[in-house]
Picture 1 (cartoon, rainbow, N blue to C red):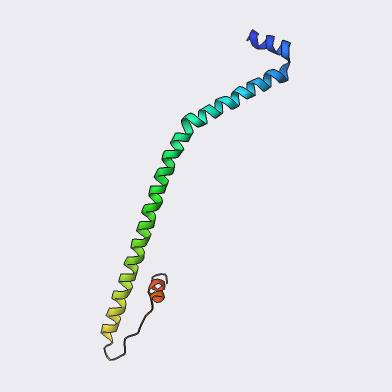
Picture 2: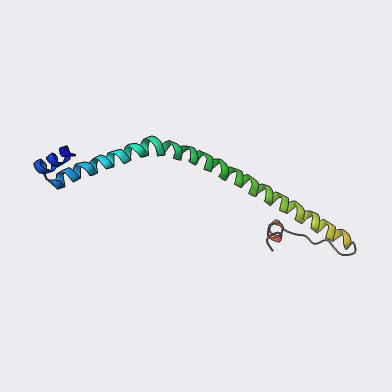
Length: 99
């Protein structure tokens, strides 16, 4: 403790405080680059994998929704054999599940 007091007496408080803050910045920089950066890299890889899985599931849900809509429209057309089957567009199939 007396060493710090001697440094303050010799160089002044602002210089000693600036040196202490410089060491603090150095310590935080080392901590971030050695401990935090590798963990963030692993988390980034995991996040990308999860996003890819979500996209695959979304595509699967879209395909299943289209299949269900086709089956429902075919059943509707079977119930009404005397009427001309309604032609539905691809856009109508996509929008039918969102109603």
